[in-house]
Image 1: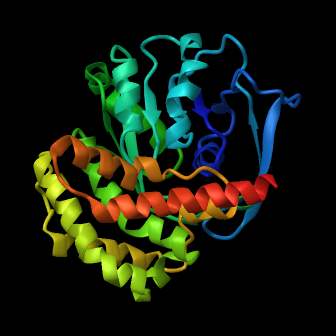
Image 2: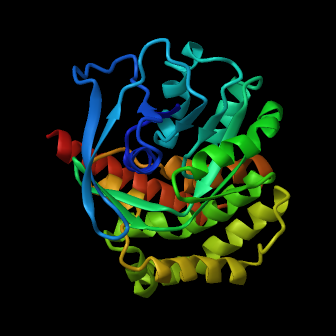
Length: 306
């Protein structure tokens, strides 16, 4: 049994694609759901729509693997609410955007097999009860704690039963940094401009700040030991390649702002700001993007609450 903590877009994607009868959602302590399962419609990459029913994990049931697909800011608290129910040698994979939450979990539970994942699979929920597999990609998994190293191949084999492409990566932090660069160079712009990924490229906000942003990223990567492909021009090319290949996609940050949810800006550009403070590197563009998205998100939440 594979258990999933977090029933958002990514959690529902894995739940829909893993073998039926071999997956369940972990109920939070405050879960008041009376139904024995969570049902939603699933639109596959081919466009076919089916109904998926995923049970809630029963009390006392011990999974082989736990996927944590919560928002980055919710991860530590969500895990703390349930982790003591499970064996200390059950591997846990963290599927979070940005950086910071993975290190926090590994530091809090250093003796557990904690792994982190990076994925380019695309999924979104245009309606509350509809999950769309919007784009195929690859997923990489690697260890965050020493004991996780012994579980890596088993974990990859279990995830691969979904039919998705999954790779082991012993240096997962390098992979997470690569995705952080892309997220930092796309997500905040899409949120501030309220546009799909591809449209940021022609905007004055992007054009006026992207070179300085990439210089900040390059300095931070080199200072923290991530030297591969860290030239500012190379980073800009990587960002724009992804923006073009996902031109019609809506980023998770834009979706969060539009729906009045807390964004993950503090684990993306905000993480870079904090890292810059630790390393003595100024990050004015990351600071500006973090502040503006935070302000926009707060304003949108006030409107939603109102």
